[in-house]
Picture: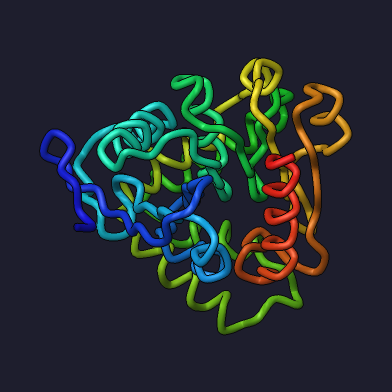
Length: 259
């Protein structure tokens, strides 16, 4: 069964493999469960691997509502209960990193570790950055939202990125309903998690892309449980562009947890 009904909202997931620890993959803004396909293929033979379509995304229902980090995190906690998932390693990408951090904060004891793949800015933001991000949020909610969204997606890739991958990702992300995209990007870009990061008690791996939005030195100084890494020659979708690098870092991180 891949659909579960939560109070009238159908949530899609895929569940494969069987060995602990379970890896729970959480996609980013306007994406879906397939955005971790290279990781599922790599890890499913040694771990139970669960991928989800957050509400409003992919095959899950998209009701008219606010799409906040809290809503997404509570959905994941509920899904874990339904699927008897205990202490997963939660792997987020982009907005999914915010959801993973919110999950750790709202449901302490549920994640055993976090892997955060190129998150948006998660520290306290200076006024000029807040203004810039607020402008993007306003644009995604406006009449010319497709142009704004396409420009945002273009900025997530490097000049050297594969044109076919970029075209596919752009086409798929623009299919997300505007009411979902606007609310979810507001949640992702306005979220400030410095206090959450300081309070983290589980091992956490940040994997930045070519131009990471978070300063690795600051993150490590904030909390000793945070380890940082960075991929080479890959943009924001580094889990797709450089899966061999991302997979190797996750694998090494998992090995360190087992010691």
